[in-house]
Length: 150
Image: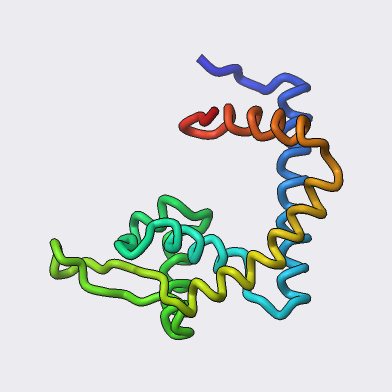
């Protein structure tokens, strides 16, 4: 059974988590924009497709892995396909289904985005927290995730 209202500590932690999360993402987005690169959503999709390998993913599988709503993923996939960063192929086991796969141009774009995004993460996280603090933060956030991760 859950409490009707959060403890003061839970409400404070929640507010800080939401604000800091938004600020960190905005700073990373700003760095990408300054470098003339696409937004983080592009990286998120390209990363998931690259990690999957040559088999690709069905769009619904991709939606489960990224932080975008279904309509956002559909529009983004159309844009990525138009730019030659992904390709849509018919699913072998379902005539109506599609598989989305990253192209070599998509892999190159992912690397370019990561160069700026990774440097941004280093500046926003590594320069502010020790390795031990980062491990503790990752562990705590992992416990809040569903399903929890160690």
